[in-house]
Image (cartoon, rainbow over all chains, first blue to last red; front, side):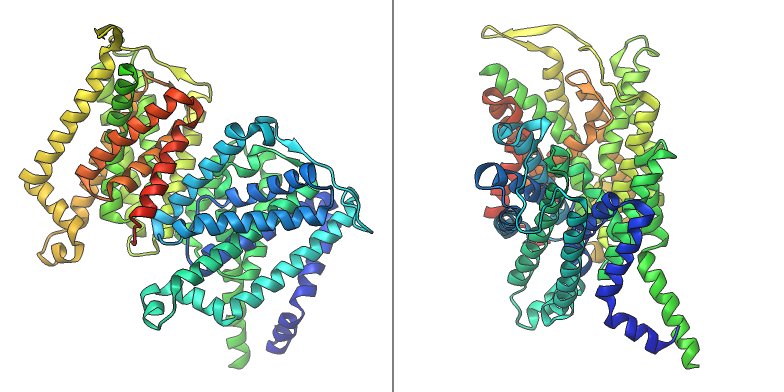
Length: 317
Length: 277
């Protein structure tokens, strides 16, 4: 591939992303592709935290669940407007993220991973038992949304189109954020926080901001899931499922927007089709994780990128 | 009330025995060892499945359970954790989580997902002020005190223990004295794993066994480690009993909330005394 071709491709990446997902429709069915795109939004939210800021969390399902339940509760108690539900979900995810972030963000490494997990466990308990009067406990809850203008989310095609639009916007937003000075500072924090502090930055504030952004994006993904299924169950907030998004991040290549997309799609393809052939799904996931950690740390996208840069060098020579 | 206190002390004793290994690996290697939960589960299953082989004798089965996890712990330390030394901590955490996933699925494969229960090995109980207290639980509490005393002696009186304490304080300085710290750390890792298996074996007669039992206990013992301070052995002891009491007291009023309350306490501790690692 020529360098100029790559640069042109980079310029039109949003259109390319949309085109790739449109191409999935005839291959996988529209329903599945919508699922894939929503999961990709969630992976992007997680990647902001793990890939860019270098904070591994084992409890990001909490915010997905908060988004889904907030959207459902909004439909039940306020109105059936789907956009209001999305707004409520994002605000709820951001607010909880802000509140917990004040405690969580102070820690790093192993502590960060497990405190998130502990809070996720608390959230799971709240949804499953303590607040079961409102959330329906183990049975989950359903909610229906009224059509607004052309946005009738009961219609598959419109749901698909809207999700695609959201995904493209989120990709643009994350890419814009991470190439801004703010994003560069996040990477500085990942590499060496002491130095970032030494340069005079209040790293706590930036970390909190990134955390809140990540949680509200995750809640947005949860609300989209809710719009898609019109049904929320406690499995949306189950802490043991957090490993899925970590896996997706790693297989695609952490710390890269396209890596997150590749990872999200690869994980969804694996989890949708492989369990038909593999009985021991958890064991397979574990072994695949070990292989990724030991042999394949840069992920699929990183592998692809080194392949291209080598090609570039050949072209130059 | 007395039975609540006794229950809290029992939970605290088991939490202490399990958490000490987690606290040590946390303090020495700076990673969360998710595989600790696997070792705990395997210990419990090893006891349950060999109990009939030993003719129902609890003590030899428990000893067997503790010894059975040594090769497992060695494999995890040698081939997973040590290979990731010097790399990002996150990879080590993910790798131990992967080991946990594989192990839990293997447990499900071998023993099935249905819960197994083991009856109280002593069965008798002791009446204090009109309340029946099972002797087995009292023995657990005594055993945890014994473990605490033994560890105190080990870390203050023996050379191996002193090296580990020094390594916890300052790894680089200890290494510069010509001591192969990693060798001692792997010994501590195996010791901690054996204690986790002991905790699992002791806990079996109180609850029932299922492949996912490790997840819950891991979170609880992590809370103990946070509250007590990482790598702080006396702190772990105090925190384990305190959180055990919290669980028992909450459980008295609202059974389902007992575990959540532990995390609330942990959050409060973190607000008051933030950890900057």
